[in-house]
Length: 297
Image (cartoon, helix red, strand yellow):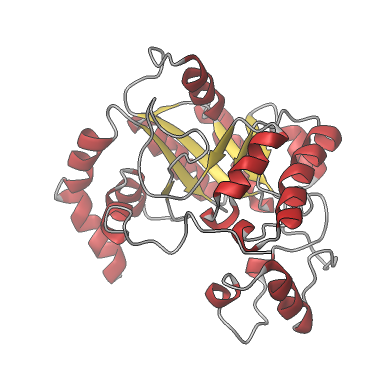
């Protein structure tokens, strides 16, 4: 209740509206969500479609390549979802209703299986934050010790099925989120290369998708990972670094505002404006994810 009250106060004091005018009017905002149900999708797309000019990620990529932003509207926003959770299918009706461009970044080796996302596994004696600091090999070894393997099939799926993707892809821009959602800078060069390249290959060959963008899992990336992505044929990379984007942004370090999968309209309004992330990360100076040096091999 206290948290909801904070968002209500920030909204009705007009701070979110002021922040929106100052920072979103002439920039492109990319927001991040993960796993909203049908009811939350209705609220989210209803509000965002009224308050922002929602554009597709590809429109921004093309404008950036041509150095021509004349067709990018004021208060432009790109809506993205990471991972490809099975509940993403529930928002298809709202996407159609509000004609809202959406991009979903898929974990190519988890979709259409009963494999699970490692970060949703709850039978661990150590915090996930600590696990993220381990090398990829160490992380997988610890997970295996406590009953999780990334290729293990469980009883129920956590990610979208092929049939759902086929139905959604006429309305949704499906892109890459690697194969198994590792922390890329904690991977060896070969591990990172396989995760980045194979994901693109699977999504293009098995799902007939045009893959030109990658969202770095957990928002962590290194210069090595960017180089691999460029060589693999990606045209842009999406981070979770705080901030907004314009014609001068690094196309492989696009910034994104994290918006919680909330059912509270006040929280949505405040977070979509970027105000909450600005306060929470001290204008991006204090965040746990982002650019990192890749591990030494």
